Amino acid sequence: MPPQHVAILGGGLTGLSSAFHLARRFPYSRISLLEKQSRVGGWVMSERVDVRVPSAQGTQHTAHTLLEAGPRTLRPNGLAVLELIHLLKLTPSLLTVPRTAPAARNRFLHIPGSPGLLRIPASLPSLLVSPLARTLLPAVLNDAFTSANSPHSTAHTTEQSDADESVDAFLTRRFGAVFARTFGSALVHGIYAADSRQLSMRAAFPQLVEYEKTGAGSVARGVLASAFKSNHAGVLTESEYEFGEVKELMEGVSVYSFKEGMSELVSALESELATKENVRIVKGDGVAELARNDDGGGFKIVTESGMTLTASHLVSAVPLPTLDAIVRSSVSTSPSSLPTLPYLSANPASSVTVVNLVFPGPPESLHPPGFGYLIPRPASDYRTKENILGILGTVFDSCALPAQDAGAPATKITVMLGGPYYAHEQRTLPSVDKKRNTQDPEFAHKLLGELARHLGRERETIPEPLLVRVRTHEACIPTPTPGHEARMAVMRRAVKESWGEHAEVIGAGVGGVSVPACVEAGKRVGRGW
Image 1 (cartoon, helix red, strand yellow):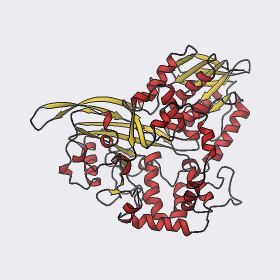
Image 2: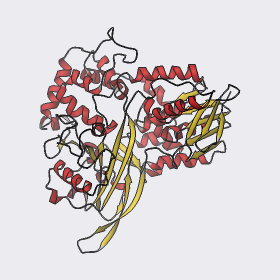
Image 3: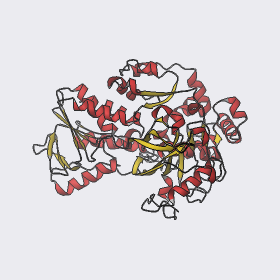
Image 4: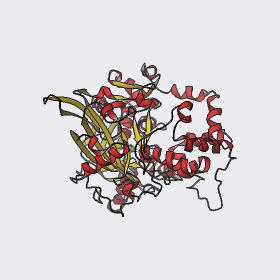
């Protein structure tokens, strides 16, 4: 029997995807989506700005620039997002970057303590002449010729650990400590803004774990074996999606976005849901209380404004600590409150400061062609003075997606700071203090000095930016620590046993932080109803 009324908590991408797919599957069921903020979309934030650019002749022209404060590009392997692009008719807005483009071929590292950027080799010839070969070649050989050394369960291994390990531990075990710090920590900075020594390998990079199994202990051998093995399961999986022509448009594509940025996906979802008579979106009113209905069946939701909803089915897509706080608060106020759930606050979350910078002139006057660069964990750890602002990486936006901007020539880049650097705030940060005071008048000056050093340039050669936009996102990216998947399995069982078969808890803190993972979770919600 279709649900009578589904209540969805949280209007981020997971909640929006849930509402969209449930509305398609159950067109006659009432669906209510509740979002505490005045807008939906979570951390997806795109902003179109006009920037005045002076010319050599003394006149001024306007650059029409798109700024992203959250996710900015997607890879074409996220099938659930490709399906949304087709269903929401977003194909005309697509902007794709081919694998042959400089932004796809050129990605860099800045090694703490050294000036300039190092290009990450993208082919064997480039590897042989790269300064990074001294790290990469021994690491690959170490993995290929080291016997299996996977950690085994012991008498002290709990259900939660499940022989899981951190990303750093896995990469150190197979490729060596230098590789793990140089490449592993940089990659984790770019995706999770986290410390690779805290991040679960199974949760973050399960494919590498599978490669190790396939290769009898060697990741490299597993990659080679998988390349020569057909994967019929992938075809069956793709049959569950509706792609239209979108899948073909992604042939040869490295990354993609939209003309007006990632917010186009959010806006299209919200607009589509607004056309559904059975869907209601409530913004600016968070959940204050969760309980069972007075008759014992279904759920009662009381919002912060005092509005009460009764629902037969419940989907929570809010951050896990937020859900934990709601449930624990409800226990003290309602005799029919829902039982607490295990592990909702087990993981930390990273806070990130995003700085959008717009400079006069074309990109080649400021930085090399490419997507951008990441910065590994310093050898002396996060309390080092080698990275005084805690910069995680920088995206060369004007090179990565030039078609998003128009008008006068200008160069747009985005700098990400914080994450594990903020987690060590007992040290004194010169411009990011314990209150995230990034509006310090000296902040932009210090940031430009760091940027110049990363690019291997003198500070005087970096022009003053025409625009500086600073946003700090508190606890925006969950960090699944080792044992996360086992803990989430326990949590899901507790939901079914104590909340009932008509409740689900999903979201970035459960099944993955990427945009495709969040959209996929929404597509699959309620499959057992």
